[in-house]
Image (tube, rainbow, N blue to C red; front, side):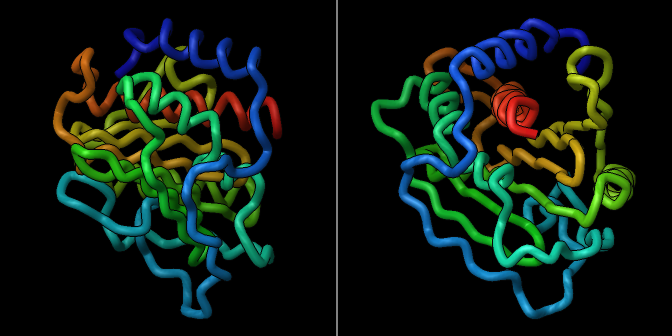
Length: 212
């Protein structure tokens, strides 16, 4: 996934920056984020677990943050902008049900679709260096990880997997959009799960750029 995403990236950034981004989670049905787990931060991928073709479970987690809950940036993954993007792309009649969780410095939002679950997670690190180190280890241990290069990565370290994941690192965050539980194509326009993961990633990154 390289040059073919240039138009998608530009459109996603332009649309979100023009409409504005909410700094907090949106109005979808959500669980109240749990406090950080008292257990030591385990070695799971950004989505909180490995899967066939996805992230391994042996990568170290970055240093835990001192926050008692997820940051405003993390909450955006369960907010209005990705929800509206998802609803628009798939031409849904209603916004999907979501649940979220906060544990081991990772905020996870799961969107329940008829075809399966879409999971978006943010691993929060102590600083940018720790986040980049975590990202690089995850990329190294993830099977079939392919870098997203050129304009398509919006200037951030990024990679994708063939089964529908897109992972970006920005500042002290590692964003993981995991569509691997969805069919290979979905929606009336038969969008691929990889393209869906990418478009949702750029929507969230645009919000993060506007609200650093």
